[in-house]
Length: 175
Image (cartoon, rainbow, N blue to C red):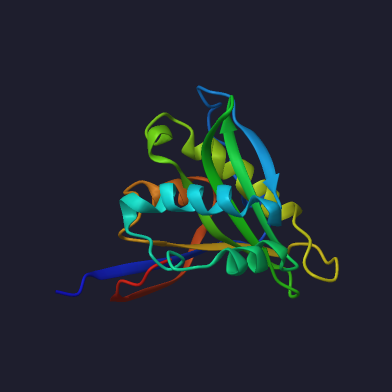
């Protein structure tokens, strides 16, 4: 049986649309990763995506991960609580000023601890600060979420100020 999913695409067109949440119960620190962090990025991606059956990158080689992390406009950031990896956000800034939040999520042991809203705030601020290849400013931040993602994902995006601009229904594909 093929699983059906609904994919919702959301966007912000101004940083003024970003709505901060309550302060988090734990302190989050952001750490930018580089191409030398392939193992950490891969492991974190797998930990975040496992509960939601993300499979699109499961067969990637180290070289493919390095290419991604080296591509102009791509930034990968870890969220840490103390020394523990709590989550990851991956940004992809395009020459037209659109910045996609390609990956966003918490590792399972930090889900349900009140961190998601603040982590999204931090990740979205980083997206607005990202420079497109060529140095232009961000003009739009967008992402997509699936009905197979965490049940509170879409509502978190909407509470932070993202607005739906498209929905699609179809067979599940891996992220």
